[in-house]
Length: 412
Ligand code: HGY
Ligand code: MN
Ligand code: MN
Image 1 (cartoon, rainbow, N blue to C red):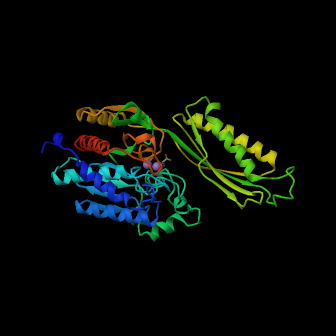
Image 2 (image 1 turned 60 degrees about the vertical axis):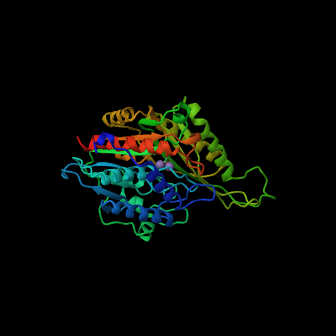
Image 3 (image 1 turned 90 degrees about the vertical axis):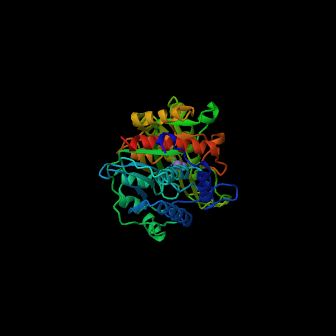
């Protein structure tokens, strides 16, 4: 068949997504597949089985990244790669990450059953721990592969129960032999739900991000003085939770203080001893800052860090600040972006140039290879929630655009 006529099998894509959604299914229709959990392992095992069914050469590296390689006519040429992540948020959705993995798998299935030979080899990839919710930071293992994050630092990261990344990776049997080291990649495409409201609001099928914002993650630790809430006068208390509360409001005010073009969020908080009749003496909370403008995000951080130090002093609550992680904003490769726009046009899908406010493994891949992304609408603009949803016909449309964008790159 002429490659221009090729289309993905939308029903098969839907059924693979439905099969994956059964793994870690939550009562309200979402998924919980935390990185390196048993559910993550189950989904990985199923994915590897599917790779082998279409004769892809499977390689698993020392970070648990899974690659499925498809030969081309000239296997000395750098491959065209596509992938995303299988891990999810604690109460995550059925499309975040997994749509990009299943979309790339569907592309490989179409090429396999139509016996399409491409000039270049191709590969589908699952990056370990994109979410960073169990083991912070995010995009860890694409970061190691892109030589932007240190393998042993990631190996030593612990979850809230003190379990180490490396031990959990070994426990699920995915600490592979292959070094997690970058190699030449001709083009990297990542297919993903938009996770925002823009495409749905504008009635557009395909989002084509010009790039991804910068992401900055910080961890704040406060020490107070615990005491019985009854007899202890308000005067002279060192209440770590009140100090945190003031700081959290400062984070929330930051975007307007900086004149916009920034989002700032405190998403995680631990409070000890977390008993209603004890003044809290240990608090940890996280700060997530994002902007297309890296300098603005750094300026915002310097500003709010001063506020934190003033509040800590005023309340007599010593503070420890960890500048945990920063990844620069990533402007995508204009040629690959054009490939996606052209593929959308030839398939007669509407498309829109936009920016990704969500982080993706493409942030790191963009540092070492020509990279671009394909978005499809999120219903209600919701994501990282159990109600996350995307129309099946949009899933099919995005996979068709991925198919033809990858073919364009694989034959040049
Ligand atoms: O944080 C993010 O945007 C992604 O889900 N890791
Ligand atoms: Mn994602
Ligand atoms: Mn996510």
